[in-house]
Length: 336
Image 1: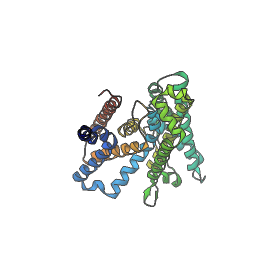
Image 2: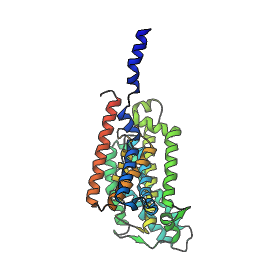
Image 3: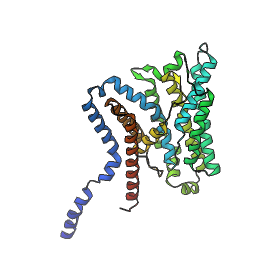
Image 4: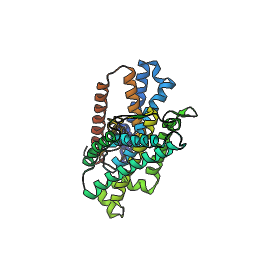
């Protein structure tokens, strides 16, 4: 009896030891976000002004919407490098439609929105089908897509911008509802829908299963190829939506829109804790990762840090996040 008591006493401290790596996996990004906000506010009192906060959230919304879709792609072990180019192409298609319909058509914005989303879905479907049917790695397919859709954007209007949209179109990028910018509301709606879908639906569980072990998912009766195509299709849809919102916000569809957005989108997902190996992560982390990037970029601008250094900072953070993900994965597998 005495020996059991002593043994329990000795073991108790071990069970109460704080798992620092596990804690950082769960809360590290959120703590880093809070720390960044405090530092930037200390350096510039205008950082937490209402106007700047809405500027950050509106900017985050454009690539944050695509990051929600990218979460599903990366959860399956894939990646999509074409999202920035597809955003530009979808936005340009929407602009062409609006200008063709003219200001006299009252719902031209709705037709433009549907066209942008349809173009994005079609491109995403092509990516998914090429990956699954031809067994080409997602990296190669979407790298080619990045060039193809950027070239198609340049061809569509000879490399020039399209502007002069009506008020109904511009409202989607500049309008406000109850004091909240419309793009932020759209981002919130997409984030909630993505969170519920991945966490509480059969489809969401299937995405995690395919990312965790594709062969086991196939043997359990899941349509692995269909699920893979679907995540690229959904990402394409959200890229089209983002292209529409960005064109509406700028009041112009630009051939150079979305350049380097693929970096931001992938960074937001990876920083948010979604594993590049697939099967682990979620929308909640992606939202926090998107906000962290937005805060970081805005704060560096307010501190007059060169845009060149901003790219360096983002690259370093991505490498650190992936290195930590690799270490955490090996630790979960019992290698450390």
